[in-house]
Length: 313
Ligand SMILES: O=P(O)(O)OC[C@@]1(O)O[C@H](CO)[C@@H](O)[C@@H]1O
Image (tube, rainbow, N blue to C red; front, top):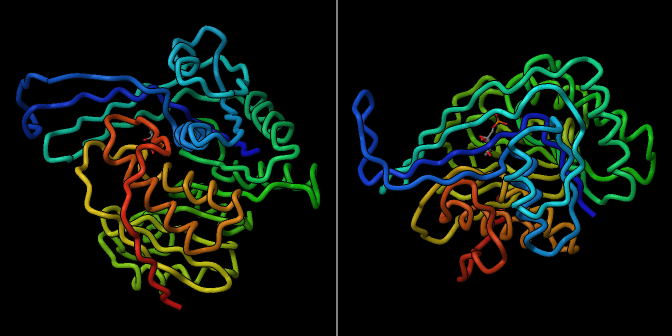
């Protein structure tokens, strides 16, 4: 079983334009959709769609309209009751596949609510193979929240604790790398760059590898670095590998990184080697980018064809 925690879920509204976005203009939109989103929920939806047992833990008010979308997704969810309501994030996609994203901070969590989320995650993680901690932290939640969750899960489950993956950014990622010893982090090029104080936007896999090597395996067990259309890089104690996705028609890049992480974790849960885990990550990321809104890919959505994996180290 795989468990995800989404500290800051989001109702993802996607508006599709028939022409490129004109900032400052009035424009007719072609269509809109809503998805129950937030990084851990997106990871969980892709994992569940592949037939792997998965539970998504999230803070959620009893009367939150978000629950309608969440129930519609069919996801097995553990709702931790809180007072605030889930934010709505907006994505605007155009025919060229360019995505513009506007993210709100989310509702504040109280100290008691934060403790309840930690406790619920510890309980849900019993018997899990992976625990995925994903997304930004809402107001009121300290930067070292994921470090606290990792400590509590490992203290409670000892040798039976799940492997822990973290997909976050900024100070929350810095805290995890400094104090959390996660088994896996999944930054994109920009997030990895911010972590080390370098500009890595648009970097190739070899440049990203030079940076990631400073963290792996000293501070984190492995890093899956997503590079958008340039594919992904996997670095662990045994080596480094890069893979590039097949050409696809990009519809919405929202959730592509989350699906890549889902593909990697699925591969690991199935006992696949590093090459195949990376291949699955790249296939899942490409599939998500070819789907509208924050739609999670199913195995049927995965692009076919060979995905060559290059060993870099
Ligand atoms: O504020 P965060 O948690 O960093 O990002 C939130 C978010 O952009 O992440 C997902 C895509 O990765 C979306 O479902 C959601 O709207």
